[in-house]
Length: 510
Image (cartoon, rainbow, N blue to C red; front, side):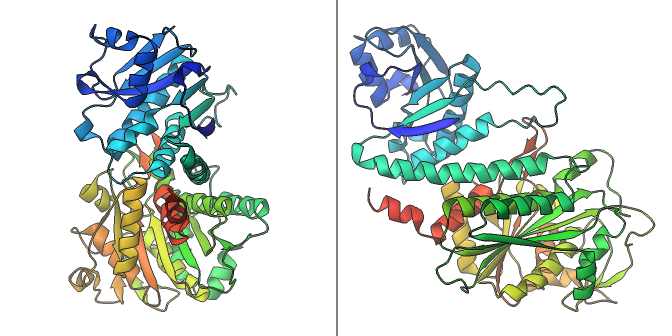
């Protein structure tokens, strides 16, 4: 779908299929709706007073052939109480608007809902546009590549123009759109990769996606892969153990982006867990829900998406993305509960549960990236069911050994609406990993599983500032609109945009 931003001051002259305006509860009209009512000699109010809609959240009314208006129709959408309007409610209204326009068969529209953000504290024109574009793409996303009948999904809506309140903010709106289109391109990559079935998307497939990115952005991006032979030489025995019983080779894909004016500036490193199918290994998972274990590589998919955003925006940073790909399968070569494995760092791990495999591939990857002398490292993983129990499907878990980094991520989460909740890492939890026969166990027992998993990883991050995002509850949906969400691409993209001072530079002109 195409987007544009414009300043419209003559609503009666807008020759488009549809104009979208909002009303609040008690039939209070938004500014654009007031203007249309005046132009139509009170027609809109007369319809509303008949009780068609009251302005409750997401109520809709489509009016055709409104007097004195060139547009073929007007879509009125309820926005609830003005006092309740916040960014979450605004995004809900946008989602409903896009779905209604598309389902009604409307090909193009001018949207005046961006004006509603004047009621949302702290959200400027930049953010109006950002959230509108990103929510619109979310509403229209479909995964249809594997259908036998190659029929494109029904997407009636082709063009959406967003109204900008003043002429001087047009440049701000255009820059916001540029940022948001890059972000949604990254989210789409993450979703598409995550939704691919495991018989197609294995570690080699992830490596091919990295190669395609580097070919597309060859001026700033390079990639290479580390296979099992090299892992053996490096002593990455924890990583190798997880994929040992799969006929698909374990493969770690590294994507390097050099955008900083100093090519030797310390990079930001993202590591994504890429278990393309997680059976649980010898500690076999129950059959129910196992089909969703193709989503255990959503962390790696999000890294690929983030690198797309980075290249599209040409961020002035050095960034490295690592997709740690493998497959966890049972079999005669599988690693077992009771095994003791030596990691790349030299630390030993007693295996008590082979379904706690993500931390094993991540711990060796966390050691591997020391060679880049990173400024910070952030790993993204569908790591623990315990995080889903703790936070449900609304917030990703955030754990870190560096408070300033955690605060940066929390700010970006609030801005993007891709929310996180910080959990603690303390010595009390570390004690749960103590082993009688090795340096540590790979699980910490029944309680605080998300925290003890992060405590395990933290033992391999002592040489740099590090944060861990547990996305087990947020990376995909199991019920309504089943499929990958693309989280936390939006959060981490905003984190990088903030680091580059891009939106601050834009908003300072407002």
